[in-house]
Image (cartoon, rainbow, N blue to C red; front, side, top):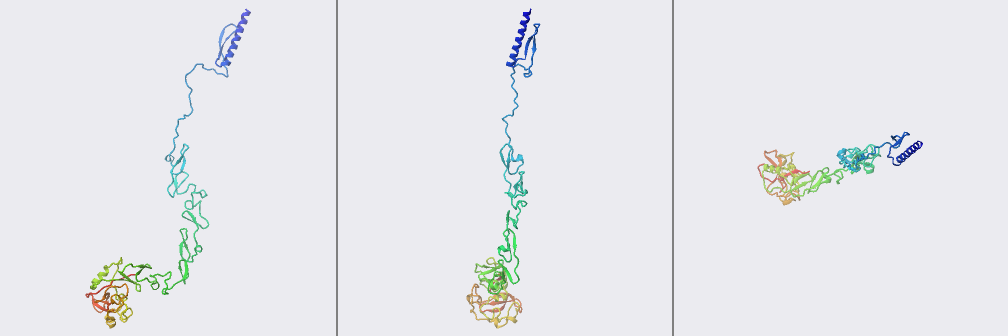
Length: 389
């Protein structure tokens, strides 16, 4: 009996040792069979705190993979997506997005919008894209300078320009005023000069053919327009600079009645010049040359202010000078040059009425230099005139 008990005890110990060995080696067995002293074998469940119980059944299911997919594509933003009108920046995918430049005169701001001010205007620093024109708050000019064409410009003074008088450009888009000269001087090219006097024989800087004919008279082949002598470039007109009158150089060669002469002159146009008319007797007498009785200031007293026979019925007016002895063209008593035409067999109409007789006017006969009156129905020559200066 004792031998049986010992045998069963040794057998139980062997099972225990075998179970522990298998559990430590494979970490897969979680139960063993124990035999009590009565010889009954019971299944005893054993749990290791470090080795939780597991289901030893084999499963074919794969573990779930929660890592991000490597196949995702980055959607780059456009200028429209971002609401940008200019400039550059990140497109959301690590690349640079270019949204262009602003129109001339505008600038790209920090919000990528075009505006009238540079991006950093107002930060008290004059940045590279700023100047006195587009950001005066940061780039104000100093030291007496003014902003001109987006640059600080030092305006020139009278002292720098060496001007004594007058006004002019200060070099920065403005005007420099250097004042006036005193009463005895006049400003000529920004210098105060003694005032010249018309008639001193010199055409001074403030004189011209319009303001001082005596010193600045144009040549007979020129006309004074707006204070400047202009070439006539024609043999159709002649300007008498003593009177300022422009004459028809070569008149028509036939005789016509006074009314016809009046209509002819009014319709005349020579080299673009219009406004022609029949000359007065005073104007017509200024053409007389070489006959002392009828030249201006001669013995004959006929004039616009004295147009009756009382002034004209004298030998000095009617007989005047010898026929065909004049200094001009065709031996006529008119200027030597420029005045052309014939003076034989008739006179030249004036517009001055003979106040002693109805429908009669005064005329000049340049073949003798005589001054007479004739009926308007008579046929004579006409040389038209206009105010030339």
